[in-house]
Amino acid sequence: MAKSANTQVMKGQISFFDRLKAWWFGYELRIVPKAPPMPAIKEHDVRADNHEWENLRIQLIQDVWGEGNASPGDEEYIEELIKPFGLDPSKNVLDIGAGLGGVGRTMSDKFGVWVTCMEREHEMVEAGMEISTMAGMAKKAPVLAFDPEKFEFKPKSFDCIFSKESLYTIQNKEQFFKDTCRALKDGGQFLFTDFIVDDEPDEEILKSWKEGEGGNLQIWTKLEYEKGFTAGNVQSRIFEDMTDRYLEMVKSGWADYLSRMKEKGADKKMEEVLVSEMELWARRTHALESGTIRLYRFLAIRQSQTQMLSDW
Image 1: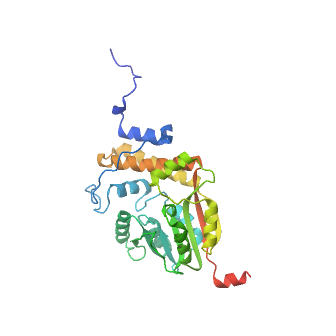
Image 2: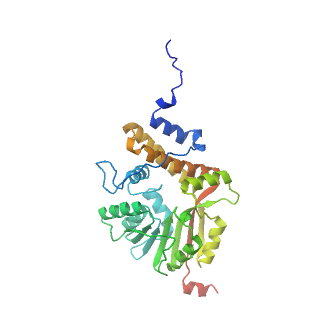
């Protein structure tokens, strides 16, 4: 008997791409299975046509978010984000949790500023520094290693401090936040985006999201950030919910990547890395859409002594 045209295709016959697409765009996204363990990737286990420092995950995140970037946000978005800084060549900038250094290179290239990019993940540091070197920005936008749990910045050493979705991963956050605020010069600005938790979160969704991020996080509420600014002796100026814009960039980035992957086919070496990375972003997307967490932009300014006296 001939098979019916409507016979359902067995799971084992469904292509890797189609399974990923259904997972990302379908309702299944809300029930994310545990991803398989990350493969043992050697430091230089890459395609022959790629740079030796570019491992599979570094390769993937650039394919999704753009060359030299480790998270959503093109140059236009970054320029809009940092507009309050009013950057010019006289200013120096600190970028905390810089990833591959893409934001730092954008600031240096567009405004001529010197940017110190600090990142905790060794592989990101190695790759980011290589990219800055190839771009001729090894001195103006270096990507340097640091441990935020132990590192102390020199007081009053930066005109501007920037961070993009990284502060929620720091354990000793209260002390780190105070030290970061103290690193601002008088009149300096601290601008960052970070995930905040709702006052009454869905505990199951929150737990799932934290597990996907590595479990042990220090995610603050909006009120806790307000208290952090007060403790750091800086004045808050902007509390802006960027969640909807962020979700648009996340979904667009993955949709574009999956579309390109369908055309050229999936790299077998990449499959397990891809599943793990998509699980990470699926959990983030679900948590953000549920309102359990939100993405906010914050701006605070350290008043100069003259300004403080004039306020009396």
